[in-house]
Amino acid sequence: MSIFNLGQAAAISLAIAAGAAPARAATINEGSFPGGDFSGSATAPTLIGNGFDTVTGTIGSDDDILAFTGMAPGAQQVTLSFAAPGGVDWSYISGGSILFSTQPFRWNWDGTFAGSFMTALWQPTSSVTINLDSGFAGALYLALYSWGNTSSYTISLPGNAPSAVPLPAAALLLGGALAGLGSLRRKGRRAAA
Image (cartoon, rainbow, N blue to C red; front, side, top):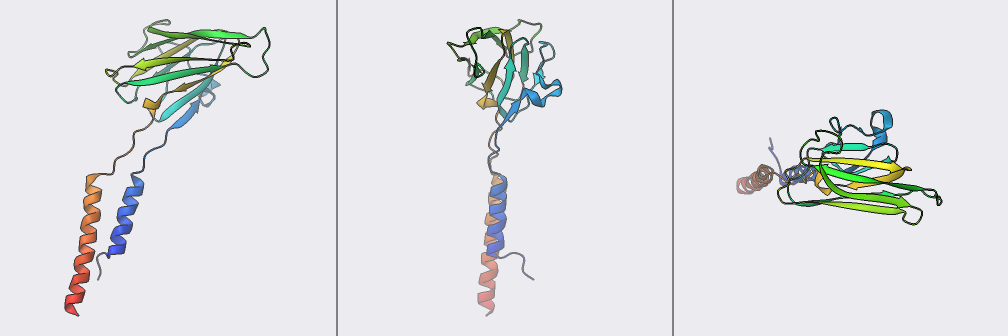
């Protein structure tokens, strides 16, 4: 009875390699949370799990406070982009301030000032970039405080994307061993013939 042939060994090795493909990051919107909105409480922020490298929402008469606790450690950039809705007139204006921390917020308006944003008819987009240094440990707390009309925002967090899953060395060894067994079996058949 045959244990494995070379073709079966190659198929198993390819299946293992396919299973080790890099994971894909995803986008999450505040509408997918209970109540359709992110938390406005500094002491109870909305937790965004690892794997979401883009977060979208709207801000205007409310505040959005988020926690990312599974980000990759090390230097990286987080970019917040704001946009006015289409069709606004001269009466439209929206703005606010961004605060961040690597520790949980203790109260509203706690944290480090990252910048402010404003969107209006004459300035339909605005952005703020947070540069995290090499000492960043992987937990980021963001507070978006706003005033005025509603604008949409996108937060880009490349460090919150899942890391590629490396092909384990054991899988490579297994593939090599199976191929070797197939080769030995063929040599045995030739010698017997």
